[in-house]
Image 1: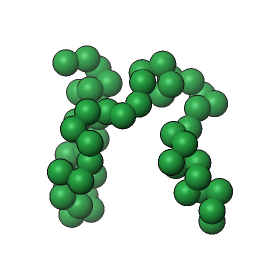
Image 2: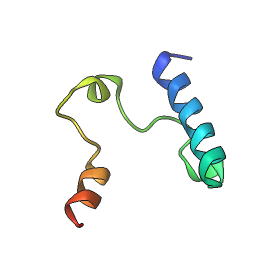
Image 3: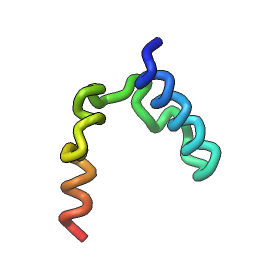
Image 4: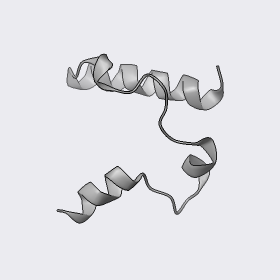
Length: 54
């Protein structure tokens, strides 16, 4: 398992614990590419759409 997969799995567990959201709500595999997440100007399109609707 690579670093992004390990970090994603840990983040999902933490979010589930802190919010009470069922961990099975989240995709099993990280839906983002490593190179995208390392790009300072990149945001997931779903996040950006939600932000722009506020």
